[in-house]
Length: 504
Image: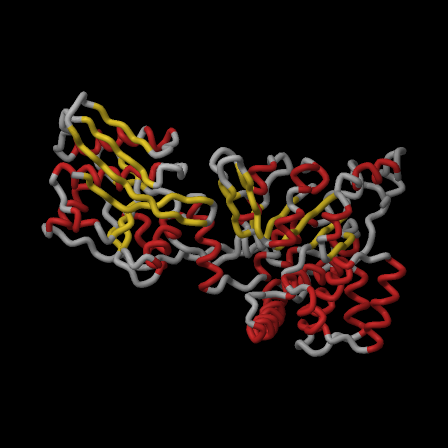
């Protein structure tokens, strides 16, 4: 007899069904796992053997073959432990095939029979729900699986507990969806003195989900401004929370199986490699740009990143997807992020300071800024200077308006955009995602605005992408004022955020 248990394998965000088949036959005693297993899967036979021994079952002296079908699909991860063990229990007669026939199973086994957390429980639960099946997963991740909808979730903490449930000796209670407590307090904009133009740009970026580049000397507050952006953004809605949690689940970053409503904020160090930022590696894991999906990716000291790493961001920023091509796999992760970058104007950072600037200016600034290519620079909607804070500003009392007041205006502008694009039925959420014919429809420029932007295209030699980004920013400015038609003043302000870096 061949025992079968259903589980899954992951290719990027895609979930593929896997059939775990166990056969015990006569011959020379052996225990082999076939079907393109990686090192972790191959080692599962020792964890399974130890777990079965811990619950009082010894493997017979037979030839045991575990086949992971389809055989041409690479199998990775420790989540195959539990389905292999359950298939062996069926082959030994400890369970019947009907006990787990309607469930997708995944979990890592300890040598004492305990079931440990694994990555990918939420996507596996979504797959099970689509197939009309239930899910068996580790106990601590039951709350994560429960978000998949109406499906039967069994979340034992030990192999014995699962066997007793199948035998009717005990009942595993159904887990409830778990939501992380959002007790974090965001830094407030009131902490930043001066920099009113930078705060205005930050509000626009938050309202329209626009990419932002801040250029200024050290200590001018660029990082402080970026750290306060999450406090201006609205929380994730349920559908967005599921989207981001799917990626974090695959990366094993959901703590205690609890979903989060906070938008991701990722700030990798400038020494980050290309696979860590965009995704990849031996197992094609999601990178920082995918972990920041529907949130903020903050790149401080932008020119210090490797040139190839920055260039790899161009396609994900435009398409909202990070595609990773390998010889044996081609995977895609969502990567709809808001890029916020900060940089000094030159290596020393004091290009415009006549006292502290080095003797190589402006050549040093040209060399430093040329590390950012024109196409990447063109994908950033808002470019602002963040000058050093003056002594007068430092001695002023805290500003009257803080993050709460700005966040309220941002929420109103986002609500206008949500309603506008919901009527179009195209899945677009914010102005930053709008493009092409739809953008020109929602822009509705009057004659004065059209004349101004035409002059700007000719004078500043804006590309088609640059022209569209000006329109997006102008649309956001109009939304911050109630969502009416774009006026000439909106186009004029949007153009002030499109400029060439000094030295270009």
